[in-house]
Length: 129
Image (tube, rainbow, N blue to C red; front, top):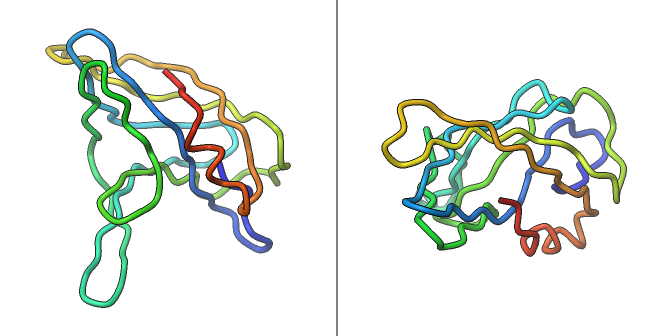
């Protein structure tokens, strides 16, 4: 999770997810530090890059999926932060994961470390199952 820049109250959340068994899909997320958490993708439209919401992210069986910024990738965005974040702190998130063939999603709790923007790549290397 990137430490927000001064004056911003939203920030990107990076992590690596890996489903076991028959695979799954990430269908939502929440955190007590944000009013909402959006699941987004990035796409190039002409000369601009735009973020767009997606309903889910496929998590193939036994294959890691990185949530990160970049064209064609997916990431989480913590919106309307309820309090200032501090570099190095750990923030709890609850992921809604729907296993293949399941009719409802299950909750998976993860801890995400807040990192300074210059070091945001560190968040890409954490495996959070």
